[in-house]
Amino acid sequence: MPLSQRKKGANPDEPLPAGVVSRVQLTPWRVALAGIETTAIGYQPLSREITTVGFVEFDERRLARISWRVSGRENRIDKLYANVTGETVKKGDPLALVYSPDLAVTVQNVLDARRSGNKDLERISEQRLELWGIDDAQIQETLRKGESITRLAIRSPINGHVIKKYAVEGDYVEAGNRLYDVADLSSVWIEAQVYEDEIAFLKVGQAVSAVARSFPNREFKGTIAFIHPHLDASTRTLRVRFDMGNPDHELRPGMYATVKLQMAATQLNLLPAEASSEENQSYDKGLVLAVPERAVIDTGSRKIVYREAEPDVFEGVEVQLGPRCGAFYPVLRGLKAGERVATSGSFLIDAETRLTAGAGSTYFGASGGPKELSHSAATARTSTTRDEDDRVQGTLALLSSDDRVLVQAQSHCPILPSNRLGAMGKPVKVLIKGQPVFLCCKGCVDEALAKDKETLEKVAQFKASPRTGRSPAPALAPAEDRREATVKTNLAKLSSEDRRLAELQQFCPQTGRRLGSMGVPVKVVLKGQPVFLCCSGCVEESLAHPDETLAKLKEVKSGGAAPLPQK
Image (cartoon, rainbow, N blue to C red; front, side, top):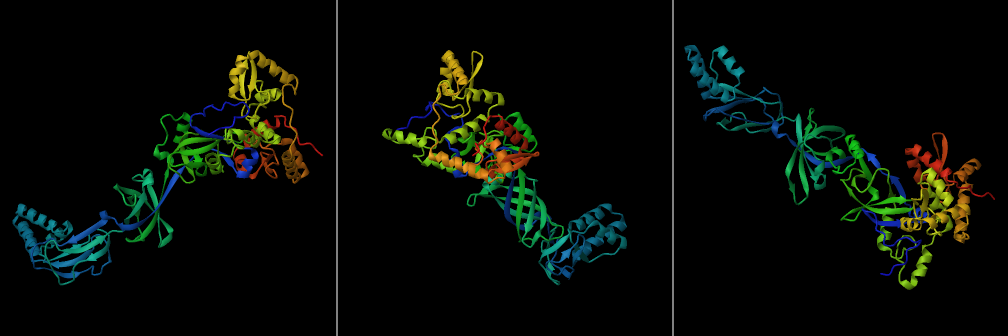
């Protein structure tokens, strides 16, 4: 596909930096039209909240099955003390009274062995009674009385309630017949299913909370007790068991409950091996580098974030992210703390760079169509003089105060005299015979060093005569007149004092845009000093970092920007 020539002498074959997949330049008007907002990324305490619905079950470790153990067919239930299913019992409470001839014979053997002094027979008979479920207290009570017994009281081994009763009074029972099932509900299980992408956040012993529909205002505490080893292939979920305390027996088996658990992102060990010392220190404090979810464009095979490399210049950076935690992603590779990314309008940037071949008026190196139409494409690419002024001022604000003074004194590139320093991004600084020289881009470095004498002479001419070697300033087109009128109209809506201060400040310390170009400037007070911003989107960042904002304001004011002319 034929491409139009790249403007301003930039090298069209210059490769993008590693990790950068695209680069786009927008005019301030298009940035405002698309509603593009940026924010600086930093370290945050991220955590992932997992919510799932489960059902309450009995704790299998707290179930007891009571059976008759004495052999013989003449064992008869004479009395059922727990005669209702669901009845609450305590440990040691009698549940049933059973008549057993074999029991009477064995007890008599114990008594006879004690009277005759036969210790072996006495011990064997007592062991037989213990195996039948008679505790030591009952045996000793029988020996103290010295009387044989024919009925055995079956007692509850745990606190709980009867969940099933198998017999009625008068039934004959044999060894192995079931009498009761008793369950302790002081602790229950909740069985739930967790999606496959959330498995990494699960850890046995981790604290969880649950809310039942019957008690919406009551929160039950528990822990992860067991993570099943197999995934359900049909639902792509994993069963997880939670131990939940239930001292008041409010959670009942069969109930549904909503379970929530939170896990800090730092527990996932996301740091790469090449992580910096700053990242490791922040990680130890529970902080991870995070990027907002709305700034991430997921193409399926990779994730892209548009980083603001310079004012109104965005680079598509391929990033490696961890699992989503709320409204943020942990950043593993691709971004650094303090870099600004597009959080609103990033999809518009991405869609136009991918789908709009005729957007040559917006982007560096964009297609202008067939060769014979390249002139019209170049015409569409031009921007207004006021746009260029705003961009230059915003770019120069990124320099140190000393370098900015030198750049303003030099003004233009000695290799490409028609190029204003800052119009193509941050000027490139080189030393030629010990003298600092600024160039419009990296493509001019080799020629400037090769022709050092001519370069220094050109710089001297720029500094000596403001008009030498420069293109005459174009007259303002009607569009520029309207833009200037818009700025004045918006500033006129301020009070006289605020308008005077805004005209003195002239540019937004956050974006470098002209005050009034995006509506009525927004006034904030930082540490007692009034600061004007281009729009409300800059307020949050300014209030969050007042020292940085005031430092930028100082740089903007020292940049030599003249106030608007008064009429």
